[in-house]
Length: 492
Image 1: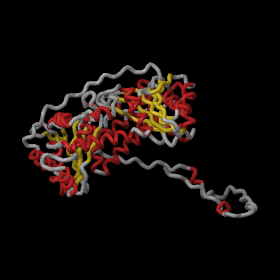
Image 2 (image 1 turned 180 degrees about the vertical axis):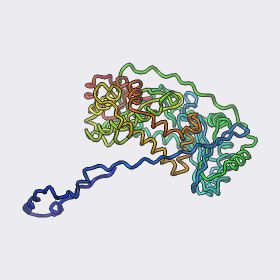
Image 3 (image 1 turned 180 degrees about the horizontal axis):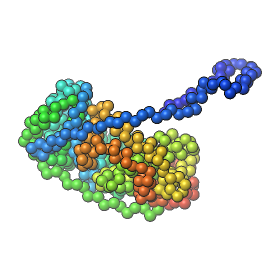
Image 4 (image 1 turned 135 degrees about the vertical axis):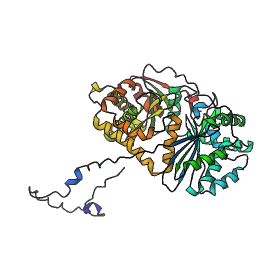
C-alpha cells in the first residue's frame, strides 16, 4: 500500500526550543483568477484504456502409454516443466491425511538411479530447483530450465515421476522433518483457526489438512507412500505441462522415448465425499490462547464445487465481498473501523466441494464487534433489500482484477504453466483460458446478485475464534449465537 507522507512545517522539526515562535500570518484569500497548483491531488487518476490479450490454448498430445502432454509455445528465456496428477490430499485414504503431500515431497529425494545427493547435483547442474506442491485435487513436481536444457530437464523430471526410490532411511528423515513442521505451524493462531474451521465445515476426512494431522502422519509407512505413488502417478493419471520456446513435435517424441515401457499400475479412483450436515444457525467455536493481543477469526460456509454453473460469477462476487483491497469487508473492518490491518475472503472450489472463507486477525477488545460487521457485510451482499445492492461499478472492478491477473500470468512461463495446470486439475476444455475474458465480460450485477442470494448463508456460518477467552468470551455471547469450545482433536 502506498503511504502518503504529510509535509511537516519546518517549525515542527525544531528541537530544544524554550518557546515557540508566533505562527506565520495566514495566506491571503485566493482570487478567482488564481490557479490551485495542488488541485490535481484531490482527483483520482482516470483508469487507463483496457488492453485486450489472448491467452494461448495449449496443444494437447496423448502418448502411447496414455500419458498426456499439454504444450504452450511462447517466446521466453525459460521453459516451465510440470508433471501433475489429479490426485492430492482428497485422494489420501481415511486416517492417512498428509500422505499425498508427504509422498510428493519424498519423490524429490532420489530415484532408483540416483541418490538424494546425485539427484540434487543433476538438478543444480541445470541451474534450477526441483519443486513439489500438493493441493486437495492435485500433486505436482516441476522444474524451470533454459530452452537449451529442455531435454535434460525432461529426463530428470520423468525419472523422478517414474522411478522414485523411497529409500527407508530417507523416508524416516523426511517424515520426521515433516512432523516438526506440522508441530511448528500449529503455534500460529491463524493456522489453528483454519485447521479447526475446515474440519468443522467438511468433517474429519475431507476437512483434514493437506499436509496431514500429526497423529495420522505418524502412522504413515513407507509402504503407504509407495502405494500412493503407484496409483496417483500412473501414466494415465499424469499429465506433463510445458510452457516456453519449444517445438511441440520434438517434445512429444522426446517424452515418448523417456516413458517407453512405463505402464504403471491402475490409477486411483475419484475419492468419495459426503458433505456433513450444515449448521442450522451460526455457531462460534473458540480456542483459548491466554495473553493473546489479537483474535484470529475464521468464518466459513459451504459453497458450490468447481463444476457447478456460474463459477466465474461467484469469483466476481468474492472479489466484491472480500477478495480485493477495495472489497466491502476490508473497507469496513480496516478503513472504517480500524479493527484490523486487513480482512479477506476467498473461495475454495474443488472437484467435490466448495467453501467460502473469511479470515482476519483483529484487536482483542473488538473481536465481537468485528464479527458483527462480517455478519453484516455477508447479509448485505445476500439480501439487496437491506439497502446495499451490488453495483455494476463493483462488478466491473472485480471482473477487471480477474482478467488482468490472468493477463499478468503471461509474463512468466511458470505462471503460464500453473494456469494450464489448473485446466488439467479441473478437467476444463483446453481453450478455457482463451475464453476466460469473454466469459467474465458477460457477467453483470444481476447475475452476481443472483449468486449471492442463492449461495451466501449469513445466518448459518461456522466461526472459529482463536484468542484470549477471558477477554472475549463475554462479548461473544452477547452476539446472540451459540458459543462453544472447539474440539482440540482438530488441532493435532
